[in-house]
Image (cartoon, rainbow, N blue to C red; front, side):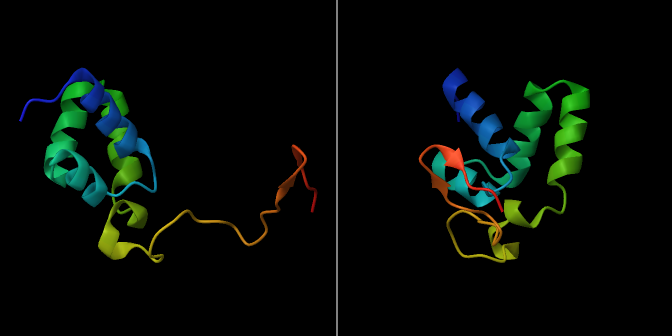
Length: 90
């Protein structure tokens, strides 16, 4: 499979996002987890790849089966609503 520069950039962006699963990347681009890892290794500096790999390894939110929530974004119970462009204080 040949990826465009835009596709490669988007895959890297999705791989860095904590809440984007490898399954979502596979669904959208057809790349399995190992292929994403290989792409990241190829496209990033060695130090950046090591940092990313350390960050992603064991992270539950990167694997759909390990997630503790079904879908949507996580919202902290202490998070307040934003009113009139001002963040409400606790």
